[in-house]
Length: 510
Image 1 (tube, rainbow, N blue to C red):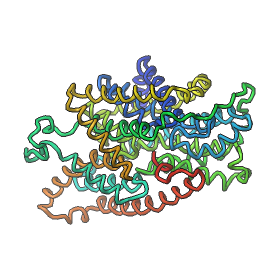
Image 2 (spheres, rainbow, N blue to C red):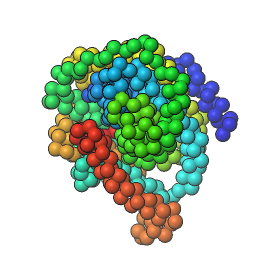
Image 3 (cartoon, rainbow, N blue to C red):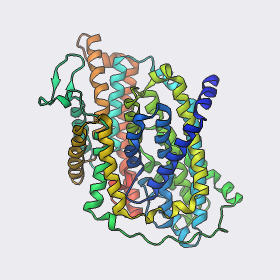
Image 4 (cartoon, rainbow, N blue to C red):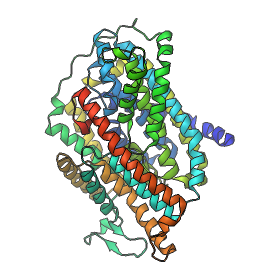
């Protein structure tokens, strides 16, 4: 491992890669700080740019956006009381009151410090645990991979919003969409309607843009959110800095919250919003100043920010070790790997070990870059919410069209974008979430191929899934996780809705 880490450091620390990391973090903070945008939107919009890049700089760009966006939501949460991302909802409770008391710089500095600590610890956990887990997973056969795919689909319970049934319906539609094209085992065409462009299946990039990006833009237009005028940001006093004593006094709550974030991040589908709420409530319960939470207490900023950034690194563990997307960003990263001809999962550590170590070390560098940019560009980021919204969303729409066309240089992919974008916008307004559809689309091929191979091994007997110990353990974990996710999600949604008055589903989207 030592030699691989050294090689990873050498591969990551090139001027080319560092520039992409810095650019990614900057973009992520910008998108995170603007209410109405999100980290997921930033990642999916910049996904087309990675198509013509080498694997490492392309992935590092997206990871930089992921880290920067998770922190960036705290900027608008503190300054104008409107979280830029749903992961920063809990930061509003104490961050905005601090800004109202003239302590905006102190609150922003604590958010940056806590985010960096949580993100770095999470990245180191990813670096030192993922290779060992992947080594164990390499022993899996088709039955185990089928059970893993079922476990991956159980993530739907955590990303379905208010209705598990609606999430399951969308997951089934996603699985159906994954079947479009030519069947690899039989050579038969499925659901192509004699369209030659559909014989190779739906391109992942236009679908992702249509599910996540275009509905977001259409929703802003429909709700006239682009006309919303946010409150004036308070002036930041240069003398109101974060002291060493304040950092030290907040370290206990930061470490506890980071631990919570790492655990929640490693659980597929749980999400950074859940981690932030759990950390905030645990900080309030254990802190000596817990009775002051909600009035402008600095520990109330440190707790959610360290937790939601601790999710970033650990949420990649299921992706890198199992090939299972543990979050929306992880699902989008699968698209980035796929466009480069790579399949995320344990085999990458065997066939592309230097690349994987470089990516994990790059995750550490992303958090350091986030701290540097957040510290020295704070005044710039504080003015981001003043960007003219009509110009912003027009540019994003053009970006979506250009990105879809660039994937294959076919107008058919633009039509796919428009169809999915309009349909998803309409059904999401009816309460059907888009994330389960993407999970079904991505995990569908793994589920189908593993099932076929397993039944061939057992001469058509389904008992093979219950006679192999690892398969049984995975199925049991799936049942337990699904039940836990359903109960815990409802608890956290109630907490978030009571404290913020926002819609339950909105409070939990990641």
